[in-house]
Image (cartoon, rainbow, N blue to C red; front, top):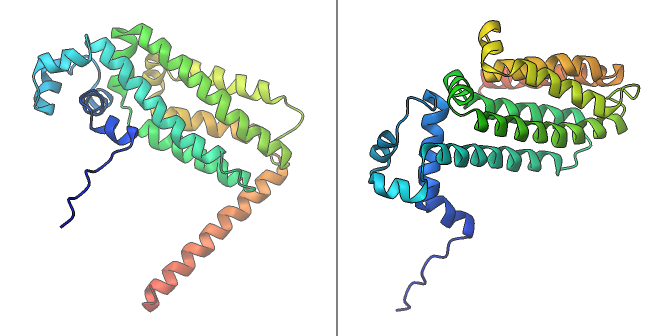
Length: 234
């Protein structure tokens, strides 16, 4: 009988199973849900079933771990966004909606205590977030706006760089703990509100017509599914 060959894992799979990645994944869940300040290294060691010595062998401090968590978060965002913009779909509005859905999904993970704590307890990490967020907005929304302009659904009388700067300016002015608290916003609701207002100003009449038809088609499909369900066809 042939001896079973050992399983081979890709570098990504090995990374997922490594101690540092396990620590980052657990810290990401705890930090984003409960805030940075209230979660201790003892909490994480207990959650992972490992000693603090093992924890500190991978990350010398909680701030180092926080940096790793933030970089891991931005990597996951960029992987998802790369998949959307690289598809080169002719349906630019569809791609834009996918982009917004992706942003919504990722901002849902981050709760207000984390945003509050990172600015208060680790301002240099807050600056890292702002820098990476700026890069993501410039790269991905710039690409979608450029594709949208070629398709005739994004206005040509406003430079794309100006659209992006307006989006960045609104994001930086509103997506900070004091202003979000004042306005009663969460990271998710704040960013989506900003995007909605900006898009209302940059989409052309052609784009609005396409969006209206798109929503109408969705309602028709939804109605067809409902009727089929009532008949027992699905």
